[in-house]
Length: 61
Image (cartoon, rainbow, N blue to C red; front, side, top):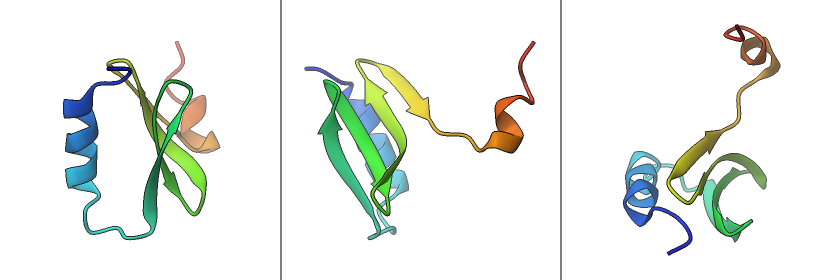
């Protein structure tokens, strides 16, 4: 298993009401896309999320 399937199922459950979200296997993991752009993904058992620029610098050190 290249990614945590239980985590993928949890994300799918949270997004079930969003028909505009798709998923695609990428980089040996799984990516969730909105309008063709990745907003979160799973690599092994790690969750990756995209944050906007206003929040990117906010919590650094």
